[in-house]
Length: 324
Image 1 (spheres, rainbow, N blue to C red):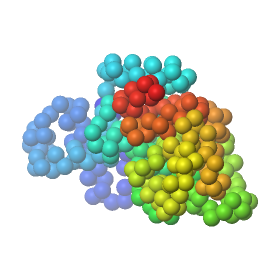
Image 2 (cartoon, one colour):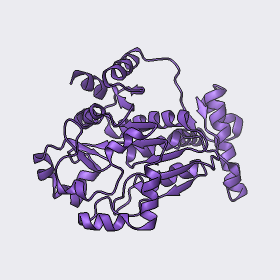
Image 3 (spheres, one colour):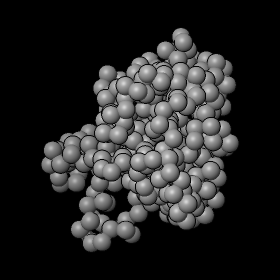
Image 4 (cartoon, rainbow, N blue to C red):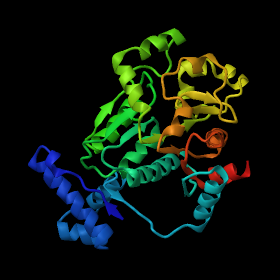
């Protein structure tokens, strides 16, 4: 169990500082001291309901991280087999959960832990977007790595959900006190000519140069069903039949790929503002975080093409990838 440090110096009032100290004390007494909720309530003069609420909050916001050191044999076996099968440098397999939101959260948590181990000052960090990558933020220990920089590696959507390209990149940059660069434009431009014009903009061109120079890339991928936030957008939903007819099994960085991992021949792929999937091959630490049976075709395509050398997924997806 790791109690992630929070900088009380950023709190603006004595009341906020006192509340943060109470949260920390409750967490320590419960997770480290081994006291019951009633014991803590009696000791601190709080109600048991208040103690229960605080413990729920510190779990949810990442202030307390449970770090289980006992290896799960089935997961370890899948990790080793995935590494050998797809030539990976590292694989992390987490238990499968019935709820998709919970599954995204634990995969993201494990991906954040993998990224945390790789971080060094001076690195360039590229991030995509989505709920899985947002969940990874909780595993990043806030600290000043002022020589690092964070950049978006793909354009954004025109609506926010707490997991957009701007929000995710900002979250990682803020955790590291690092400078942040954005692809401040839609993921898909109206025409290829519009894309070329956008890339000629100084700021966008600079961010793309940064994206191509990152040391670490943390990305996810999307399938071809309405579970994918990208498929839910009007731009993609209007083209979904054509994409499927072209052989698409999902997207990486907004680029739709076939079962072998090659970009399909479709107009959307000609006007996408993002790092190209093959450019991930030159990244020192490319991490793909994605899972679920519905993601098997696209995750398999990405691994087969060699775009990612580090994978975080769940047991069900891992087993299906090995059975391909």
